[in-house]
Image 1 (cartoon, rainbow, N blue to C red):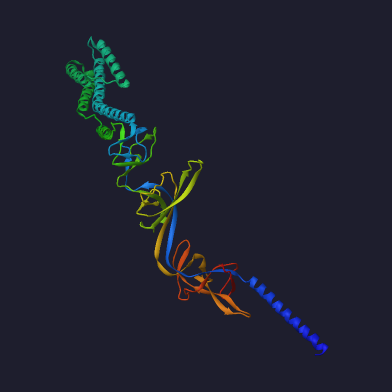
Image 2: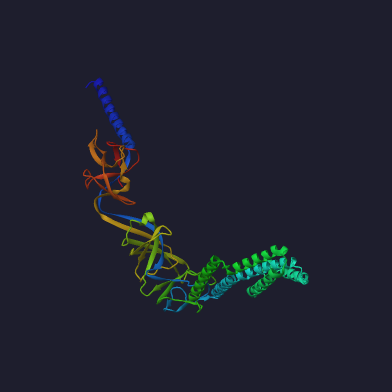
Length: 464
């Protein structure tokens, strides 16, 4: 081999080495620039949906004790969670407010009764006074036109009577003998009229006629019913209502001064403390009967609880605290109980659903404990389940996933994504169930990508 050929051979080798080196570097750079993805595999089974809430220790089938009247709680006689027999006193109360209320109702009844009596009698008496005044005025007119010697003194006497009656009417005084007096005055006026008709001169005929008219008016007024029937009827209705209120108050009047347990069991919770004022109908205590079971109660919003039936699995987590007798250090422990929600009720006042989950009576959850509740609803079984993050939407706004496929590259096989449209059958907070004939149980599906990808993109799969 000549020297020239040797030089050419060496150059060719170095060029080949450089080419290999550049190819390797370019492949490394190419691989580094590829989207890094994580993949997952298809699973089968049910999809469990769940909601979480905060719960509290409670009892099923409790009896609620309400106040039958207004009172003050003076003493709690039985501590919470202590056994109680039916009719055993649990709270001592002060019924002074009840006594006052009864007296007030009695006063109202008495006041209305007096008003009715006054309304039935007063119109007659006032009318009697007015008629008496009218008659006296007419008698005065007759005497003013009379020429008899005693007319002047009689006139003054009548004037004094008129002034006295006017004062009585103005001051609202009612004479008990009003009607009797009126009748007597009317009789006198009639007799005087007869006398004046015989003896009074013709020029006094006008006064005589006026007196006749006044007497006729008085007789007509006496025949009228001067009582305001509408007012009297209203007062009688008010009296009936007051009597009913008085009877109801006396019927609900707690004379014993104690509130008792309504059944055998134990007071699970008091809603009042010593010194509290209690109103009629107020919830005082919950009493767990002998048939009650410990449970955890919790509330879910209307949206969250509407489609969740009773019978769902419930996981209860709560802390207990224990003090080391030697070191004195208090340590906490997380406990877990699995139960079933057996009760569901809609609460329109709060617009939510109340659930209760009874648990094993051998366990004990403190009434003060805050319970973390996880309520799980299990669906039917599905053949294709993937994490929720696997499903995205394509340019046509349809649900799709990216299945990992293989293709031959320049130097080796490469991982390529294939877009596959799917139908979502069910979902929860974590997983989705899909339906697609293109997805096989052994397929790997894209879970996460470091860069945006599309159908046909070459990717680099990161192995865990």
